[in-house]
Image (cartoon, rainbow, N blue to C red; front, side, top):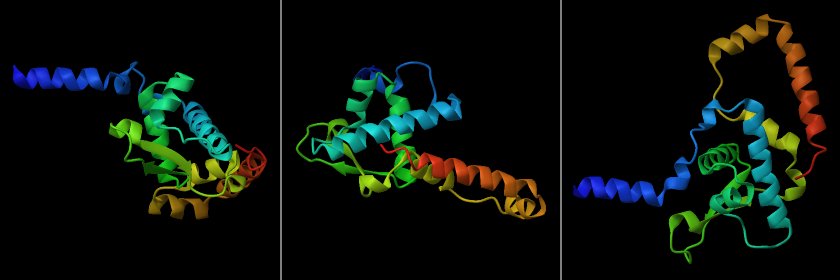
Length: 157
């Protein structure tokens, strides 16, 4: 009974992490990129205005995007080296103590840079790299991707 009560208490305290049945991996790629863009826009704008940085929970409250979707997009942005988490020890709970800041000058962070870094983090598959050199089609794809990223660099957060 004690274990069940503890599980129930934990679930109740963290219900916003599990709101909705939506899983990040089930979102369309374009939706995941848009959520990342919204998070980057809000964090950069708040930083540029010199105001207190957002927590992921505050971004959820502001946008009404489910908390687990915000958390996953923040993880992607951290892995892509676009954001950094800073812990503020003055807050009582861990959720309130982690704030988000841009990892570099805002002038350098654009939509195109975000796309480039999101597409670029992670490891390469060696067999795909060998296949790429054999197919002329990949060169055309790389050209289109490069043009897309360059156009995106004109869109500031």
